[in-house]
Picture 1 (cartoon, helix red, strand yellow):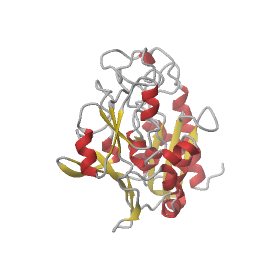
Picture 2: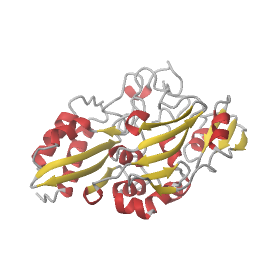
Picture 3: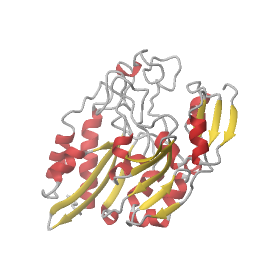
Length: 327
């Protein structure tokens, strides 16, 4: 790993000013960035420690939750308000990585971890995300873990976060601050799909930093779940994952939230399936039909075609469990 300098930002303004400098990279828990540096994928000349930024979790006036950028993932998962009102978020975080990594990783760092695959992590492989225009070895290579939705001929890597899948289902918003002021971006609009520029992963402008994540009040606390299907029981990325919340009355669906992980270059909000389910019967048959609608545009590859049926079956099982259908 190449030598680098270290600076500690004392405020959000300080971090923004340092972030625009050539060769500077923001450092939270470092669980992704330092790993990529060791592999020779990232080559910052200076790391800017931003762990002095907000590490508070507080109520909002509207009854939601505001989570500071530097809060550790383990602290979010264990917080009483998160466990009581947003249980799918707590479960999603606990399904990710290892206890040691969760103790180090920050909320902003989790959001900003690179969308990546084994070819991105290997500097000798062709990867348009790492080196634009070089090609994508995953297209004809080992693509078991790759995208079936939202990918492009230039990149089919999947977003690795579990936490962000739950945040997507919860309609989270990302608070940003930079030299041009502050703004709030819905998480659904924060990530870019790869298109022909897979190296651009978010809508962050130069010098902008994440200061907090806001979650609105949720009505799904008692009827929500996060389920992750993976090759190993722990410390593995999702083949597919499902964050779900549902409200029913007299056997019909009043409202539903669905987001998926392991299947797209960003946490995937299942808007088509949600629309198909609202107002309809809360039955396994309806759940399966809604997933057929959501997956109509799926483009599986040789190594990951199984994900289509796996995601469908997992989603149906989760929704059936939440609605009490034991059939």
